[in-house]
Length: 381
Ligand SMILES: Cc1ncc(COP(=O)(O)O)c(C=O)c1O
Image (tube, rainbow, N blue to C red):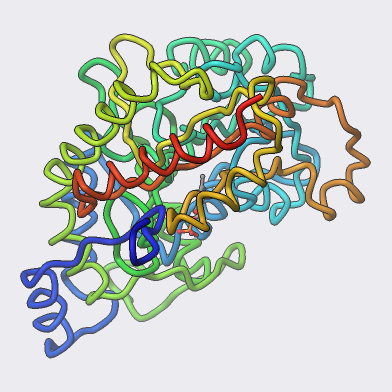
């Protein structure tokens, strides 16, 4: 057994990251200075869009995107139940109605047919999540949204670095939200961004980030006006320094994640105890998370017992996510009942997230695979 706990995720901070933050902290502006704009430009270029608006967190990015989209109490927004609650909470902040559509049981992303089934005349937006890092079926979702006049906000907290063909995550929806939490692909401590090609949305995003303030004109730049109250969702300059430095490493980090993920898939595809999510041709997975689905019919115990046994082996395996509509707030407020999204419910009880991060070594990964073999042998039917 390994002597220390292997976490499921860990940031990679290197000496040049530290130097960049240090330099930013001793500059004149430590918030909303020149580095925020440079980070935004680099993010927009990376995503292949005209605008990136940096935000204080991925949650702030989601809220700002829903605000910029003009969502309000008369609107329904379709999203997936298999996500971090921040996705659905952003819809609730706007007073709009969260509508959950089922997932595809093999990709674990929103199923376009399920989206069609729950759409109504009040649907205004679609909020798909690239679960674990696999880009959603935007080739189906976008035309559906266009036909119906819906806006598409992609929650790409897991998939920055991924792509569909030669189109990178960031350019696949009307707005794409990112998170730079330490477990994610690159980090700014806390942080996020919204990427978009649309000038009008970028203006609104910048306004909500800064209290809803519209800038004065050239003659009187000190005058400002608030047309709708926004928030303070600003990212600092020293966080942007870290973000810029980390963005330069995204491809290297991604390559290491990809190599580890391939090795996991190669070994685990032979295991009778797990099923791997599908990896459709032509998609580049972002590999934020490496998830497997247990074949519970071949085991004597539940997923939680397997997780506890892995923890006892010092493997920090975990699960993402309890379905959003099982949280008490959503259960009570929207009177959701079991059976709403059958695929998601079947998948949820089988999900396990295995450790995956760029600094993980092959030896660390061997420890995970050995622990899995041991635990499965012990609990096999
Ligand atoms: C799918 C998803 N959306 C949104 C968020 C929120 O991001 P943040 O933690 O940066 O607020 C997360 C973070 O865990 C996430 O996993």
